[in-house]
Image (cartoon, rainbow, N blue to C red; front, side, top):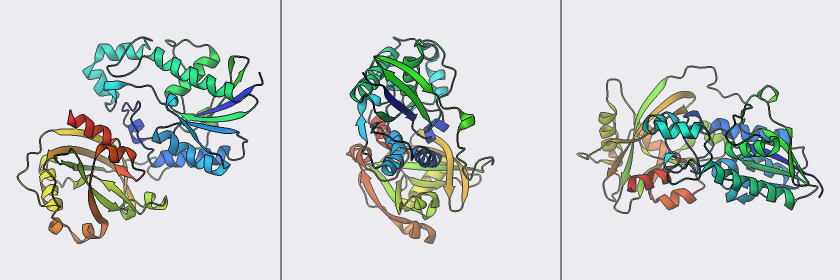
Amino acid sequence: MARTRICLARHGETNWNLERRVQGQLNIPLNVRGVAQAEALARELGSERFDRIYSSDLRRALQTVTPLARRLGLPVETRVALREKDDGAWQGMTFDDVDRAFPSEHALHRQRQAEFLIPGGETLAAFADRVGAELTAIAERHPGETVLVVAHAGVLDIGYRLATGLGLSEKRDPPVLHAAPNWFLYEDGRWTLERWAQESARETVVMPYDGRTLERRPAARLLPLDAEHRVLLFRYSTRLSPIFEAQGYAHFWGSIGGAVEPGETFDAAARRELAEETGLTGVDLGEIVFSREFPMQLGADWFQADERFYAIRVGEFTPDTRGFTEVERSDVLGWKWWSAAEIAATQELLFPEALDWLLEKLRG
């Protein structure tokens, strides 16, 4: 059989990568650096000759491969089998949270125990079988061709082990870089590693906030839920975030809420924002259901966002926006009640990430 050459690349960076949060098979989009990394990968590989392109069907992989596919003029064939390992009940948790909640189980996970199963997920052995079978099927389908595959760190890890003979439980030394090409050869049923991406040889993707200590911006965010478990989101102008406007987006959808004022608690800020943005008062906020931190552009500057989310059962209503400031009136374009299914299917910018997963988690 003629040799197949495969370029295997991981997706670009996400905010959940920054937070060290378990993504697994949740559909997390790229962050602003990840988008820039995808464009850099397209520039780097734009002059290469590829015969086919395959990708995981998860959004972060598809967003990474799209600029290059467009430049090459090739379609992208998606494969569910190229998804990241399913980490079940741990998905959405930070690694620190997992370590605190499941110390003995997390130890087994770190030891790469092949048959260890996270509830609702898949074992490392099953993941390796799935990925190995899919990569081999792709290679055998295209003898004599050069194929691009964009997927996830776990998929690249299995590819590395197929090509080097490294056992599943053994430590892999070279890191899996974001949006970097790693080259493999497949011939006569045998994988070999041609070249693994090294950080020292990579183009550095520089962001405006690199090297800065960003001012923290604590904010209370609210997720009003109706009887059908839909969530109310506002549509905001991307004038609030010019980097998205530069990518061609006129608006994005996001949870309501805003910055915590000096001396104010998150609870107090949530009540104030809810009253000002919807007219609702006297609502039971409950506990904080989700938190996240990430670099955020607001106007011309960047901040370290520290957002805490409250889910409140309110029934369907029409927001009373008479409490809006003039700036809010110019930047908020409307609202909509979203189901988890609509969120999962949309191609629009929508925050927070994985809100469909969070809604299903809140449903219990």
